[in-house]
Image (cartoon, rainbow, N blue to C red; front, side):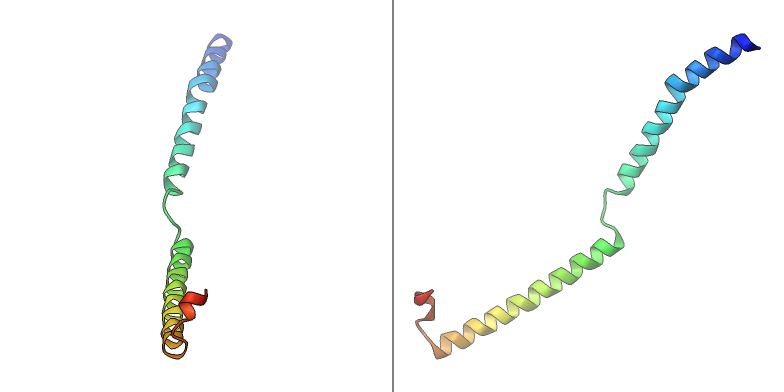
Length: 75
């Protein structure tokens, strides 16, 4: 019985454990590939903020074009 334990232990430690670790981390890597729900919501909020800022800049440029026609040349 003692003669069988050592070779099985060697096989377990050299083949099974590294393979299990490799498969575990491959699975973790695949799960973390995409965006989380929180990240997607943050990205959507940033997109909406950028659209609002763009709209405000366009409105300010329109007002400046009407009131100070040469403002673009000064900048």
